[in-house]
Length: 239
Image 1 (spheres, helix red, strand yellow):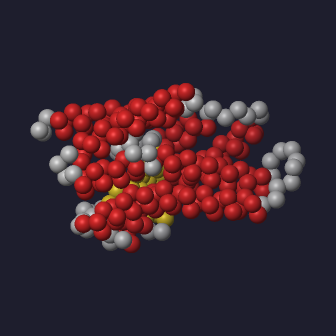
Image 2: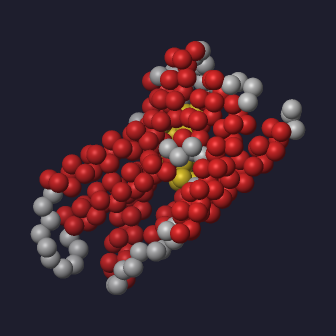
Image 3: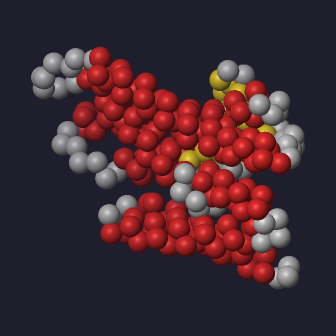
């Protein structure tokens, strides 16, 4: 996946003692998503680009921090976060303790859903702050209007990113949740069944993305569908 391997241009820092690494492909992703916006002047374009970058960075970082916090405080495992060309991923430093039975299933589902839950909380905070901000109607940019745009972008991105990740397409959070549920009830055929569901969901979502003009989403889902097909082919050879 684009941006997993380290590069000399990575941005690295620590946040709440979590190691964060941002690959250059992440910024390319942001620029690609921003390119469809229609803005008249160069100064307005630069201002909105800066706000857009900040909003996406915060939204996806909070999503991954949701996973990282569950790794640390529920499973007792440290992790690092990588923001890459397809979003982000949280990688534990050591194997995660496995809980058995329904308790184990619920714990694993919570781990997978934690990122989306964190994003929805962030969206709620941004929405609450938007309600409290009263921006006067005037031409040009001012600090208050930039804050309003940042909160609006953050709210929208957090909601869309959370909903998108809950689709049962592997390796999205929703796909991992569906795989764990399938494996819980059918250890032998769970992976195959989850891949079939994942490919079906990807095909449906690709169709809607194409009709809505969301070509990046269609490309991303197509890549996931191809990965799922290859994994399904490998699984078939095992039987």
